[in-house]
Amino acid sequence: MNFWQRLETGCDRWLSAPAVNAAGRMGLYRILYSLFYLWLISYLRFSELGLIPPIRWNPPLLFLGFSPPPGWIFTLAESLLPAALILLLFGYRTRLVTGAVLALGFGLAGMRASLLLKEHTLMLVTFYVPLFMLFSDWGSTYSLDEILRQQRGQWTPSPQNSASHYIWPARGLMAVLAILFVSATVDKLLQGVWVSDPRFVGDLMLEKSVESYLNNGFPVNPFAAAIANNNYLIIPAQYFILLFEAAFVWCFFIPWLVELSCP
Image 1 (tube, one colour):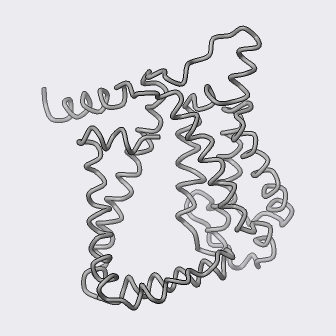
Image 2 (cartoon, helix red, strand yellow; image 1 turned 90 degrees about the vertical axis):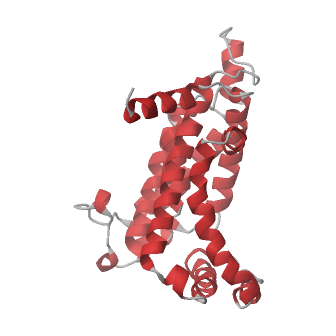
């Protein structure tokens, strides 16, 4: 068996391995994700994107060839997204609603990035998570769908069900995160400033705090200035960030980290 066959076999075994309380954990993850997403968009004003001049339109590759949408599109999508998230929170028509959350959230985040060139990190919440969960059964527990199926006399899984098909989407998502973290480490090392400029992370922290307030309305971190100007904290943090991102890939090889990092 060559290297690639062993790698494929190992990946298959990893994805198909059972996980303790897999069905219940995914149901809880759906609830926590919905609550976090609702909190996140409470600070964002997507309808304001309709006021930005079209000349600022600078779409990523996926949106090339499209013109900026009219302002009413942002207002409509901004109203539909929290409604879809509330339905997802309670687990009603979960798969359909997950698709709606993916389309609405990714569309709004992509337009925001196209017009403001900010908040590319929103893609993790708006794209990667709902994309993988679209193929999951995270609505099979702790949901209205579960109650409705029980009323119809249909089988519903126990939260203690450990079957692999409940947990594999979370593991697939974790694999994507590992690739993103490692690529981010490589990019930082290629930039050079992460290891050559002792003020880089401190200045970046202050810059991001102010940008988040101006663009999103998030409160400025009251401790940002004190931390950013403390060399005993910020310089070690500069290297810790690189080590953390590079070490994320080890979650594939340490069993307890696999269980900890999956919902």
